[in-house]
Image (cartoon, rainbow over all chains, first blue to last red; front, side, top):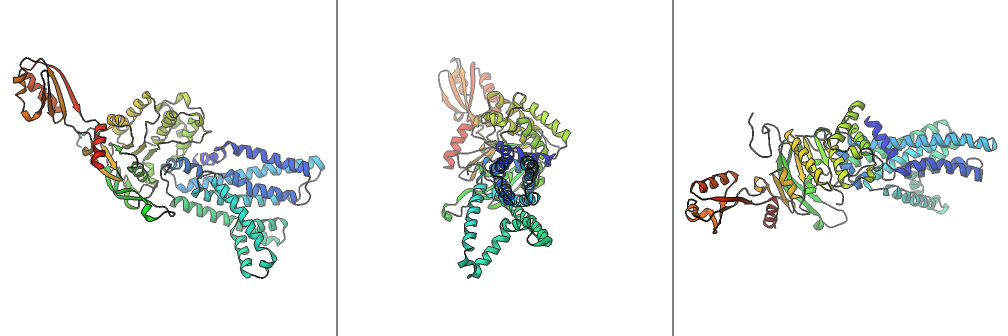
Length: 245
Length: 324
């Protein structure tokens, strides 16, 4: 009963969550109908939007709203392990991501078949990669939400994402990448510690073989656990003074 | 077993451990972006103990440290120094939270949830079964008389409705310790009366209640035990904080024989002697009957008796001045 209520809350807490779940598949459908993307391009679009931007939208204020409104203090007065709140919210997000991607999968199986009799290339692999990326982002965003009140956790992560991409692009400039060892080191650190964009795109294209695929999946889960662990630690250390202080 | 005569306790509670125990609490709000000199010291060496079945009114001017003290008792923040125990357990432990009920000053709920859904959610957090949750929800709705708005979305609630719902959540687990922050905010007169009756019932059941409130008149009807805070310190606690029990007794009489009747009392006790009214210093309520009896027996034809005592509001002003 407790698990059910805590999981349900992640779906029901904001009206826009339902709107996102309904409107994004429509958006994918429109893009397909209007632009008829070739090859992996459509899979990449779904992967980017559902793997990266969807968790940011769904997790906006997932704990920060409670902190800002003072509701977290009432929840803390209940005889539950505080970590349960965090874990169920993360699991709730992950389930939402899974259901959303299953809906998208069904839509993208049916729609291209009806329109031109062919399917989206590597659709299953792209959606699995999207779910793995979704989980990593959800864990990161939920952890940031422990510290950042209201929905600013998502805004903060979006700005950080843009910043990291700019840094990565800068470091990939030939003049840096090939002449300075530290540039490569930083790129490697970002590749393995940040949400695994590069690794997961390689996983879909199957460039590095089966063993590497397993490694990438394990790496995504490990990152999710590490980000989640940090969030749990922060939640236990965090203090919640009365609203307004 | 020994019954206490204290107005705030109704059964033997001396043998039980303190429901809330604070020892040498210091709380400094730090900020990495400001110098140490600007850190706010919200509490300084606060120690107190609240027994089960006791209602303590937490009063003091704004910024006195009342909310900080409530937050420390609830385990929402950690003390810089000192320790808190709820029923003998650290406040963040599950054992302590099993005994805790908390009602915030500004209750917040998921706006799309109805009162019933909110109650169901909180009942589920207590670890109740599906049947027990349904039963608890119905009971809470009835207890706080929320039938009229039980199925409306919380986003549409008035402050009073939110307060009722927050109170229902706070008392759902029959807490041993109940922390209330401005509980009568936004309640209508009927709601305030119901709240008072409910708190008195809980006190009778042995719940230790700490109420922070600026509504001194309301507090006065609940308890005579106050904890007055000023600038992060306890200025006075328990009987010392209660309004003074002594007072001025105004006795109206028919002027014949007043002079002789007044003389039966020690002159030091007669504060003012008018033609048809005496003002007499009395020590407590029992002294009133004795004094009036003495006057009547001495032949005074008493027409009216009025006892003028310090209200909690007067005590608040006095303590504010003393604290300042």
